[in-house]
Length: 65
Image (spheres, one colour):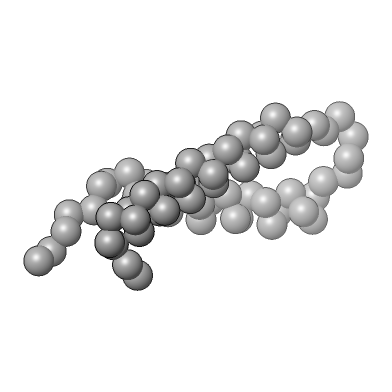
């Protein structure tokens, strides 16, 4: 049985790739002047928690890797 994946997963994977690229570049370019990533960092952790919760829900329903 083939399961259709939500298009949002593909979109998030593309965004994740872009995030990795920009973080790598910021890691080199950042000079620390007038920067505050605290809100973005909090939001990013929250997003990861939401996706982990979804994964755990699916695993409890018997889905496996």
